[in-house]
Image (cartoon, rainbow, N blue to C red; front, side):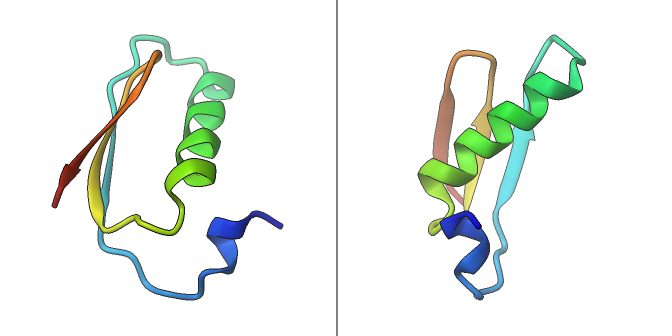
Length: 58
């Protein structure tokens, strides 16, 4: 199980996908990458593109 799913705390952040591709496998991969890297800090505004994840305070 991933560490982000074990946190047990509610989250109030926003994840905005700016992906030109509608390929679901790419979207899932980018979401997993975001959660693996920032899963313990989801109270922010995330902008996910095909090449990066930008983070802003919510």
